[in-house]
Length: 461
Image 1 (cartoon, helix red, strand yellow):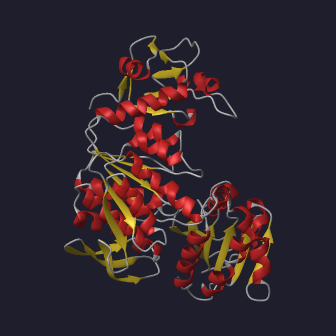
Image 2 (cartoon, one colour):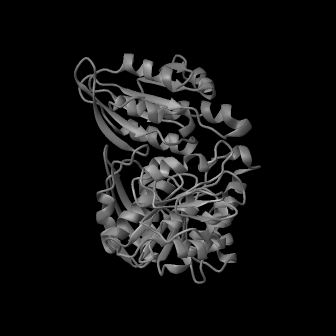
Image 3 (tube, helix red, strand yellow):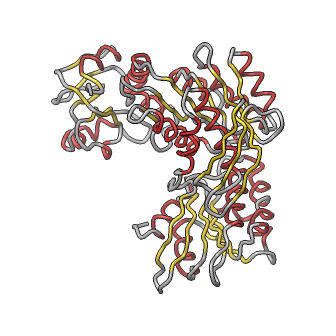
């Protein structure tokens, strides 16, 4: 394998000046990720300046630096390191002959991105590149592109937003051959006049489609026609997925189980039956998007079905784990701690409801505040009362000031407690848990419930 980048290639891509010859096997702007052989990009941000961490990165094994000020170690110097990273991303995209898939949506995009990656990896082992974690913003996307090896056959990139125009900028860097919109819902509604505005912002992904590209769109979504119109206006071939009659990739039947889901789907003129290693009806929709994208990209849908069966253990997005309790016995934690909105909250509460505790175990829901919901936030939070009740929750721990309306709505209906932050939630959960309990943990990432899960799994909070 050739090096990911040489100093001369970086200089050519960015218009910078190389101080010496070097080659790198990776790219990062986080000095904590340096393990040896990387290019460290010293980004200037609102809170800190990456140049402060240059010495740390070199000490940990960085082979080269992208900087905008003089340093005594091998580097490429540019006027603006963020612009330099973006230029590297564009150059990496241009030099690779890969089929590129872009994924966005109000819910499910990281899970769908991972499932597409795993599906294509079965078809083209060792030649699939994908964005890691949720690197889906103005820094994460160019970083993910810059990390793409030139030999890549398939690239899978996630794109997120909370304002109009953001995905338009990202998709023009990614230039996908296949663009997937998983769903449109009232996420980040604080920054939009209506949910239709969110649909328009998600539809920006088709603006970067390569000529002859395919848009994979949700048939059952309320904004389907709006999305189709946007895709058609940009010359995209439209493929729809869903449960409704008329979808190109359609669930004919499915069965929901406590820890998995089975689906029989019509995929254009083929029929495919497969298992998903994740629970919940929302994964039926997600899996159809995956199958549609793999088909459009030229992959093997039967191999995609096998990959979906092995899909599990996504931290923060449905991972299940048994935890040992201090006083003996075990409980089950369903880790949905990465993010939350009204749609995903209802979906994962339904998963909790389908999970029957053993023995005298209870269903416990630890729910964190949902952010960026604007003036409608109290109503959205109070609206979770019925899904909580329908799930048969025995005890709810509600975290964050925004959860007060839900606490009020649950009075005399479900035993609940309202706490201020994840630290208080840790104390409550430690005192609450009993053997055989099943605990759902879900909230917006900024609430910090991932730290609660880490504590429950035996790490430091």
